[in-house]
Every structure is written in C-alpha cells, then in structure tokens.
Image (spheres, rainbow, N blue to C red):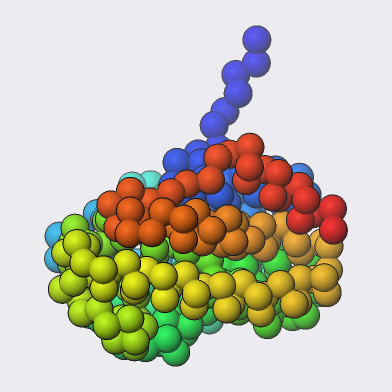
Length: 284
C-alpha cells in the first residue's frame, strides 16, 4: 500500500486557520499547494506573538521572514538544513517565484505584524483599516494573484473592504485571548464612542464593554456591505481567495447574538455551515 506523505503547509493551515484550509477545496487543484504555502506563512506570522514573552524575539522572527522573502536566505531556505530549511519558507519562496508575487506586499504585511508584538492601543478606525489592509486584504490579493494574475488588480477595492470586515470579526472572536494579555485591537475612537475605557474592555464585566462589542460589530458590517457591492463583479477565477473573508457575516451575526458573552466565549461557525457558505458563493 502506497504511503501518503503529509503536506507540512496544508497541515499547518488545517491546524491554525481552518477557514482558509477549507477554502482550499474550492480552489483549482493546480493552485492549492501554493495557496497552502501562502496561508501557512500567514499562520506562522500571525502566531509569533503567542510564541514569545518579549517583543524583541518576535521582531527578530519577522525579520527572518523578510530576509527569506527578499532573497537573502533563499538558497538556505530551499536547502533543507536546520531553521533555514523551514518547510513553509522553502515552499513560499517557490510560490513567490512561480507566480511573481510582489515582495513589497510581504514586507508591508510583516511590518504591520509588528503591532501584534506590543500592547499599544489601536488609535482609530483608520489605523485599524490600515492594519487590516496590510494583513488580511493583502493576503486576499496575493491569493488572487496565484489564482489568476490577470484578474487580481480588478478586485483591490473588494479585497480592501473584505479584509477589514474579516479582521473586525477576527479580533472580536479573539477577545478572550487579547484580554488575557491586556492587548486591545478595538480602535480607541470606537471605544470612546461606546463610552468604554481600555480597562473596562479588558475587565469585560461592564455594560460599556458590551456596547464596545456592538459598535465593533456595526463597524465590521459597514465593510461587509461595501465588499458585497463589489462581489458580483469579482471574476470567478479569483473568488476562492475571498471565501474566508465572506465568513465575516455569519461570525458577526453570531457575535451580535452572543453579546457580551464574546468577551469570554467566542462563537464559531460549524464546518458544514462554512462549506455551504463557500459553495453558495462560488455558484453565484
């Protein structure tokens, strides 16, 4: 009986990002391996904060990724020895070369991820939109380039709004983790409008914290609606890149219904429900 070899990139995405892992089944088969490498890279950089106790080692790790992507460690990354032989790095370097993915986009993503390493406040909605744009929206654009480079430029506006909506839902679902380490991603101006201080949100026991959650849900929905206006015009070859972001709607619906409970127990969407959302979106 033939031995089935595991795919380290896909395994990592299955473990760390189930929404994107499920979306791979809706992408063309010849794109799945490179999409898995891209999404595995995102898992790696998104979880750096979870693996450190001080910011400096995190910054060093992000710089390592910059060096690999920029080409300074390309030969070592592909060689297969020690940390330089990181399986995700090797596969990502291959995908970047194969699809001529812009190195500058990865650099902006890594620069934005430095914010994750510190406990600084998110100053405003505009800052949040910029952060989401350089992380989630950029990831959508890179995935679209893998799927169909000639169509990628046409979806920039949709990717921008979809990425913000996805990030808004994501930070709400991560509230228990962020509160435990006294990190606040909700913009300060949204907190102020809700009459909620940073300390009240971290404590999670006041009506003010519930109002802040509701305000963030409304903010996320604004971007869902803006992204939806563009969706009919998104070329079908790149729609698979948008599937994980489209789950912002069911996530925000569940968060709204759970109210302040999201501060302690974030709601999820079942895998069959996610698959149905993906299937329906691909058929439109």
